[in-house]
Image 1 (cartoon, rainbow, N blue to C red):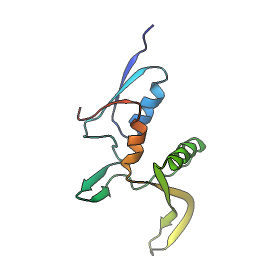
Image 2 (cartoon, rainbow, N blue to C red):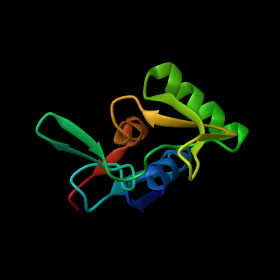
Image 3 (cartoon, one colour):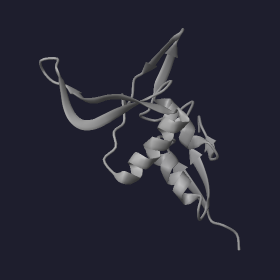
Image 4 (tube, one colour):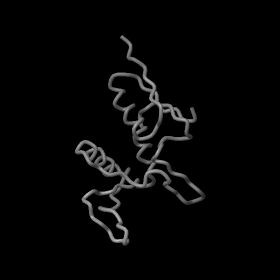
Length: 123
């Protein structure tokens, strides 16, 4: 019996994660209108500068996602940024949640998630 075919719209973090989960039971194709993967994990390059103009960081609030981010740290996809947030007076307010940034750029997370998937951009 052939596997069902599924189309996922959007190659952001949610779409790529959904496609990975779906590949256990179906053949998934990811379509995105952009030039590359990323969605809100958007990065632009202007000359030699890299600018993350989408999500600035990611945090973990569940054990399952913390394990995923831990693998990304080990693989060099993300790195710890800082623990807390800057308050109104410009002072670090430690809130117990480490922020993680892309090691090179935030869309490195999406590029890592896209590995092994059939992703078609500019669609």
